[in-house]
Length: 79
Image (cartoon, rainbow, N blue to C red; front, top):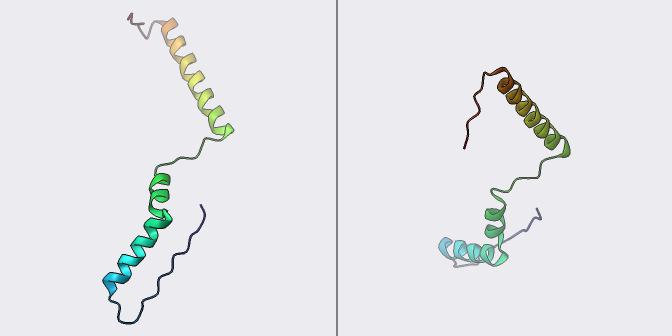
């Protein structure tokens, strides 16, 4: 993520509320909040190794279920 520096200096005879108002306006103009909120729930893609492990795990589960069906421990339901 790129860093954006927003710097506000308090002018003479300026109260804190107006400084805060100027700062929030600058943040909104820069679009920082929208970027941060957009990235909040983003997840990075799984690596090749993680994908491979997941697929192998699913294959092992499926193989185990098929074995249990063959042994008669799991009854296959009809839809």
